[in-house]
Image 1 (tube, rainbow, N blue to C red):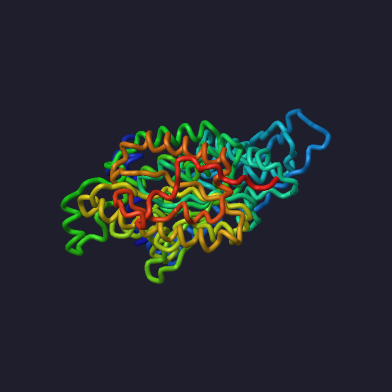
Image 2: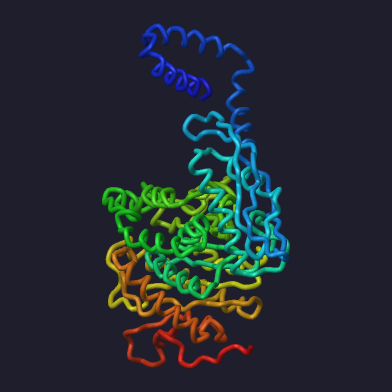
Length: 473
């Protein structure tokens, strides 16, 4: 294996030098070097040592971003100058060096000056290019300041980096396939009321939305861009039709009905960070261990792979292996992730359910659509159980799923309408204090829009709650 790797490197050098020195001459010269290296006993362990060194090089130290009350009303530029920068270039794996100047305008709180250098270190410990490094540092600091302003917290410790630090307000985004567009409208309504998250926990499509928000920060521009992204997505981008693969899957010759390469590209193209721990807003995503059925909470590691695992709908997408665990969609074990948010220290949890297609007039046609609909019913019911179990133990706010919905599980062409409806419904719900109504699980109940029998149950979530009792001041 190592010899093959050496030969590949040598081949690259040959291609680079051949135009100047003649391909045959260079090839003969380097072939002699390779044969000589393969006779050195210690050389065979060199690739492992190189890999270990890169792991150490690309792993940043943990820290908490210290902040202090701006009691003196200081409003001038705070600047940390000449911070040494050395990061491996993602194109050549060679280090580029320089210095960075990081400044910000203080608001209600002042950041610990020495920590600005640690923020730079956080992002230089990655394969980098200079332009992205500048944007990541700026976005990270802007996100931290935005959360501090929104929460008005009095603590001197901000949980911006350490994932073990207790959080205050968590947004929990559940699974729901193409109905993930609904969560964008919900997020916009929350943003209008100044409700921002200290922590994001996402499952399945909720992991995709949470990961995007975690990287770009909680701003109106972020939500506008996320809206445009959802409007562009089509079924072929997520569930490409491959009749041969589907037949082979049904025959047991393929692990899933669809490839996950389109979904992987979609995730990779939208994330601004490589590792979960580098996100602007702290994020965890949930997945399910195929062998044990246990929920797995991912807060570190490759961001694209983690989100892909969280969204790996069984039978639809192949399972994803992370650290020896074979993982599928987190909704199978823990659709909402509410318990995860509480375990991470959240004492205020906002649940954004994507819901399910509750007003279909006939069962979905086709194996793919039927599988997705069945999973959405399963995961939605798990969400209902979790809300019922935890409603009395945490300050829980459950936003109403959009209802009625009659969109096919593989139809992404209605995203703009779903976002607009969810925005309007959630805004009215919040204005009337609907998030404070007791027994929030009743708004998640499975129901039938087409049976006349009143015992069958109708839509449990009115578009606007009818005169709910507001919480006492």
